Image 1 (cartoon, rainbow, N blue to C red):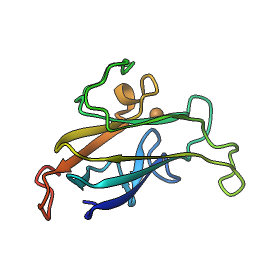
Image 2: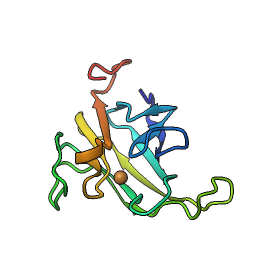
Image 3: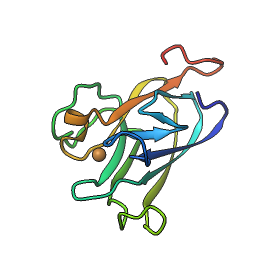
Image 4: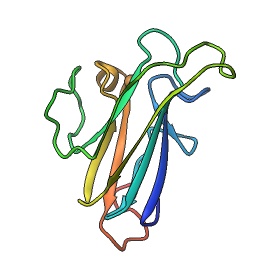
Length: 145
Ligand SMILES: [Cu+2]
């Protein structure tokens, strides 16, 4: 649960030593992320994955799993859309360059959403997604996590 009116969330695609084809934040893999209704969210995604086909992006939508191989153009209630980021520039973690992108949005509408990697097959075959819950204003804990 990310409390407060302004929250900053960093999601990493394949952090080192975590499972391939997954998102990490706060040391957790594909966790349910909760924010309060009305929160101003700054969401940063970084791709730490490496190798051919290891580009990843992120879209937050109310579309529920299971997902088709290709997500399609018209997803319902899109909160955020981070374009596909290339894998890091080299195999060496210390010297590689990492693609990242930050988006900002306001979580006006309560409900259950999902953050999903839109690269074809990643959400279908590898379950590269997690829940993103916008809790009604005033709750201290998230009832849907
Ligand atoms: Cu992906």
